[in-house]
Length: 430
Image (cartoon, rainbow, N blue to C red; front, side, top):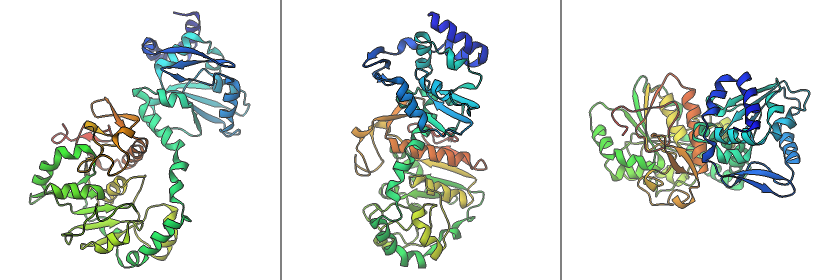
């Protein structure tokens, strides 16, 4: 054990004894660590530089400048080499600095190699494992290197940090002044004005069970089961997202309600033939030709997005929650209809069995499998391929579930991403 580690560990043991015990069993020997030199030097872990190799101090200053100077409480995610912590602790206004560990083994290794006592000993510092909290804290700075290096235990918080960091970028395509958005909403006005209000569906299924069906690859495990349940006299309500509609029909499963919100949905996804007894709940960005062709009852709705502000004032309709994916309003509709229990199908947020979606070819509904550069943990605790926006959608669904404790949420499969707040269905999940 190094001299640095003994001194660093002594501080941690004195201040955070429970956390100290966890750090002592972290296995830093599994990491590939290298010294990287430039104008200065830094540590590279598994090919990822923890900091700049040229000027760590200036880098920390730039990172600190992104945080409000007058905030008495700040949060740093990732421990790095301690540079950002030392920079922030120079602020006289700072009362508390919460440092959240994103990779325990990386931190244990740094404790062996460098003196971290100056910031660990500061009474304003509180040290945590990021994964011990279910939600991120604001205001924060997340060290980019450790967002990449985050371990399994802290992965959920990593996903929330990345989602929050990318929020402004992700919302760029929903500019109310964008010509394509204005054109689509104008084209939909007449239908929105005359169609039913989704609020008419609210409260119509109080205390009942609802199946919410998405298009993840694990849906393929359940086609036969869904068909059998659909034919029962008493059964749950079937709500599906638009891209799941055709695969369900292809396997003899007719949903009761289809939810659609995306301007890219076409008649290829929502063919109108035989839809007289199927309800369509939609938002005005959906292609008006798709809407007009639908034979069954149509219910218009809005999200909280500013793109609907003008329509909302002219023709008020009920609101459904959207967190980036059609799965969110589908689940919200089930809750607002009064569901006491919701079982999710195909809500994978990942690519189990090296497939992107059930019933569609690779790339039909978005990026191809080869573009999957990220991971989440599946229902068995194993890493599984995904893409960045899927992780963001997962975060938002988990937040939604946490906000509705009165509803029991079940996941029908372990093959996709682990969804916090759900239990695996005792009969359906394999």
